[in-house]
Length: 192
Image 1 (tube, rainbow, N blue to C red):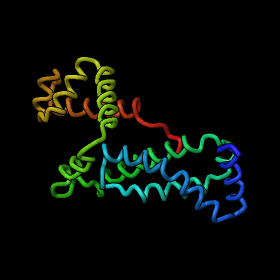
Image 2: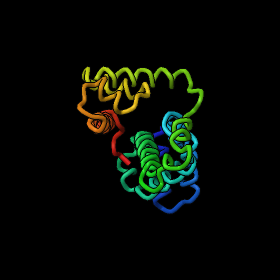
Image 3: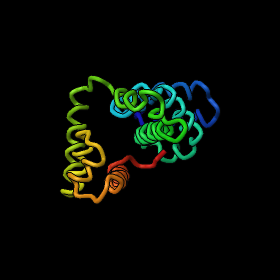
């Protein structure tokens, strides 16, 4: 029996209410979601987000959208990867939103900045370097100057001077629009 046929049979058992099939599915495909989340969380939010909680929530989503998955059974690993990315992004957005913004707490911004994995793997580091370089190459010279000045830790007044903006507020707003555009261009899809 091919892996595709095994998965199809497992999903058919699930549709009939077989709890053991649900456990097998979760155990078998959980590693995909955990791997994606561990890699993303190490670079984005570290220990602020419970990987197991996000995976568990995602598996519930998989089980509730079972009919869709049976039709596209070959794409379950891709669906799980997209689900993991999107669930993590949603959790991070909630952490940074309004009254739950961890950066509003004492030392919150420093805590958020320091939560990533201290020692990324070599492949993670190479991947991040490549992604950073690709993003920087996609920027115009003024945009690159703006980003580099902010990364260097300059205040908004200095960033405005270096990037040719008329005011600190103008520099800050352009930076925010640029970050939003980059998220849209380089962010993950909305499969989950």
